[in-house]
Length: 283
Image 1 (spheres, rainbow, N blue to C red):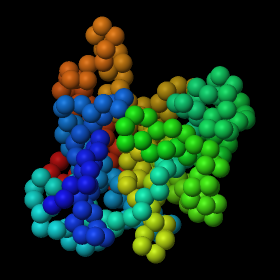
Image 2 (image 1 turned 120 degrees about the vertical axis):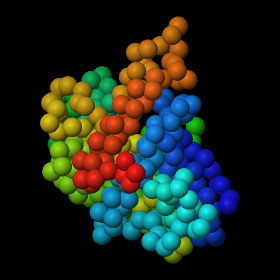
Image 3 (image 1 turned 45 degrees about the vertical axis):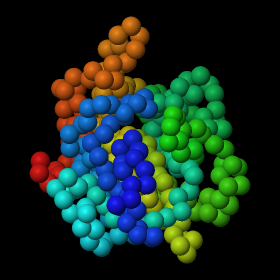
């Protein structure tokens, strides 16, 4: 079986000229470094969340998931709940981000009275406050290092104005549709990113993962309070440990305690259970 790439979390295999299998592993990265130790069960959780949302949004935009049976090679215990057969696409070279709340880099820019991704943020906001309207931005897709924000004109020049406008409208619609559902389940989707590709006929297709704890910022609605950093269902707990437990100024990527990794897994699992009402097979 031909492995095309091994990313921070996912391994991608080519199974035919027009089909791939994506395997979501338990690897976890922080500050662009992949830890030696995995977060057990993380891959199954991410895959289950993403598959739920792909089904939930299929009437808004087609996605790359194919319902056919997995090739025999992937019908092993090690791939159960992790492998997905997908359509091979021409992936667009951008990540499309929708932000519904002011947080992170956006808050830093606003606090410093600076533009964010070329846009002026108007209004009187506190940390983690909901925006008057969701903000749409675009960044590059960096396989190494950090993504970089790009101008709207760069996107238009690269893929064309009609396609760019279509992606923007679909991204906002996806966010609003899934935000409403998650809110009813006790979650706030503060922001999220999307990736798209084109099929053999030039049709737009949603790809990669959607609304997982790795691609979206989920907050616990019960603990959410404007002006404070909310409880987040992602790897922020791990990041905080690394930041707060440096030795001689260096982060201890190879020395993260098992209980920190378990707590991280528990937060991912809680997010899955809130969204879908169930855990992963084997839990």
